Length: 193
Image (cartoon, rainbow, N blue to C red; front, side, top):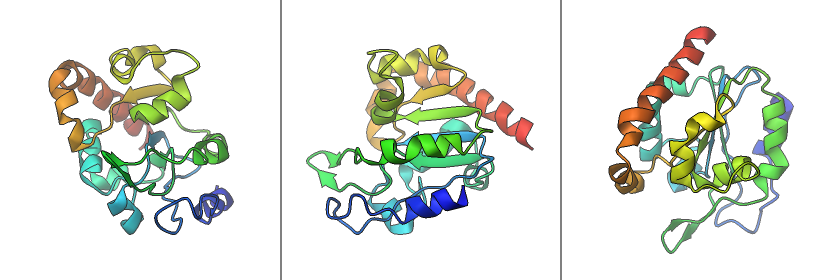
């Protein structure tokens, strides 16, 4: 795993296609128990080099019922995005993650984490990449039907504060789904300690 992480962190595949010099952001360990597959680092995360080091990360940790120390413990959580570098800004927010990263790195990373018990698919990009072969649902339908993808995957919306409207339109997410998500994560973490 160390060699693979070194390779990823030194990747320059998208050099010239990004607004900044490549700075792949990832945290993982060969004994990570929960894999969080997000979108791509935002500008703040690109600068800090710490995944989910923003308001979206604070929301995600709240959804999971974990504190910062637990979330950033690589023995427990692997944090890997669909695109490993900040893709830049478009008309309505950050651009989509670069398409080169997931095919280049994901299968090797997941293979190197044999103890992973759950993969959280955060947002439409991760869900389309991992679930499109099994269904043609939209994000809301996938999240609502999360049981269908268990025990391997747990689809979630992006925890960005920009998605507060989605949460208001889908109150079942907070009342019904989040307690189940916290319980699943809690069981895995309890077994790991």
